[in-house]
Length: 345
Ligand code: PBG
Image (cartoon, rainbow, N blue to C red; front, side, top):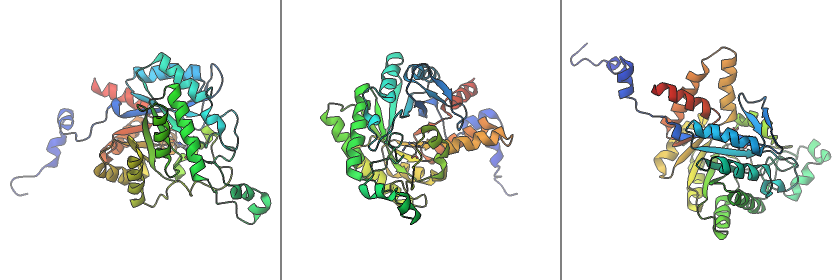
């Protein structure tokens, strides 16, 4: 070996020197914890498809939110479960809906905790699609048509869906949400929402847009939880094709132009390159959603004795951070907060 000797291991030789040269930091400040809200009182029902996750009613979700805040996590993301569904998803913007009531309960108990709300119609529509169907799609639901193979294209009416999304976002803002997060992938929805919020005096309510949301296979457990699987067809006519990258940059750019304060890439793990490119290209905060399938992959593998869940969890979260995410939405948030706390000792 020549001189000077290059020995990479010098900087790995002790815990302290490893800490000193760590390039990526992960803090509890980066995390957002998703919560599922349903109708009722006193409900805290374990979700079979997702380890350590529950359905909460508006009263019990507040206590959970207080625990989340006590761990130092700055924000929760609320998802609603509809008690009744219809063609247009009208429960999504009901003043006394589960999400709207949950926001109020949380804000009463832990005002400093940021409340972000998922804005979408898929949990509220009979079709399970993220928007309102055009008439032609309703025809396609007819079994006679299905047998002819015309049922696979779900035709969502973009602009009338945007109006309903804006209505939903406004109802969340009125209940006290700090940030609304449209996850539907309709064109122009950020602009509809921003304008509607401004018109009604909610200029301080921020928009976190699910900008580059892919038609991914990793939403499986979530759709079970929210009972939001499409009744027919799929989401490929509105969510992005997972093989595309440039289009993600165009989606993000448009959302920023339309007034998004935070942009998101979803899912995270198969799309670390997209997170990386987004962070390099745009100045606005980039969030990454570590989705239900990614969460359950680790849990299932750990359950089968194949890996150490917490070690794998931290590796995953650090990788998302290293790729460039400023914010990580993850079902691991509570476990990660605990892990980060013990590491500090
Ligand atoms: C609603 C929505 C979905 C998720 C977040 N918002 C489901 C979907 O698009 O099918 C997925 C979250 C997860 O898998 O953890 N549009």
